[in-house]
Length: 276
Image 1 (tube, rainbow, N blue to C red):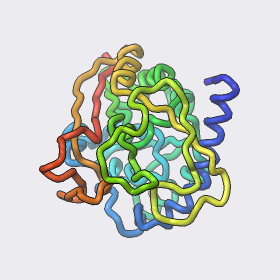
Image 2 (spheres, rainbow, N blue to C red):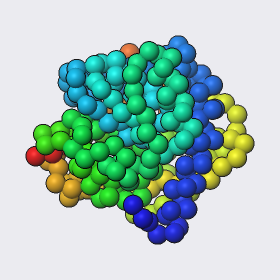
Image 3 (cartoon, rainbow, N blue to C red):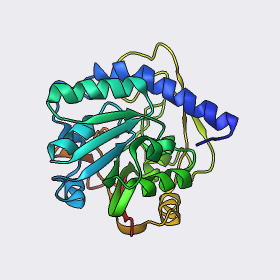
Image 4 (cartoon, one colour):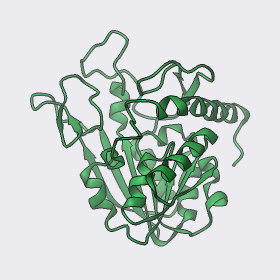
């Protein structure tokens, strides 16, 4: 897929940024790849929504180091992971081998996923938390997803809610715990992020600190999928997060929620769409 020169430059900057992030993430306590069960990255409702994966062909787009990909394979799926970062694909391949699961990984921009993975080759396309914000053009992405799916196949998207992005997924510099809108909810423009540090523990990135995101509202995601000929089957919102964004959050089963006295707000949404 050809983008305008500035968008192409931003995508290349993100690719370099993820290459630089990967060794930090592999060594981080956040991922703890040697000891942490990869299913910790999934909420219980995800397995309910996905159903029995035994024998299903699954594409995991923007898979990074493949922690979630391993969990999908352990559930009986034949999984292929795709990521734009060469270092991430290398790390994911090594991690799968260490975990004793058979997963094929492919290095490709997600906007070219169908050419890289095949047309109508999958029963399920899965994309996990923190992926869609790196997509500058949702209609192009949705068309790729639709092309990957067999008739009757489904895409399952589990994403950080745009309200969380508006509240800021990381604490502000002053450490405020207030639920205040700090960023856009709706998309429409690229946002440069400080890529000096990643969302995990670990040192600063030595190079490639430039990073860009494109915020997308839920309506924008829905309309892109519908425009690609997919049918929305289910949409849910949840107040849970897989890490304690606010210090007041309480935990249940490894996931975190704001206390009962706080407003009930969506922090993650999950969407299923089907190819007729």
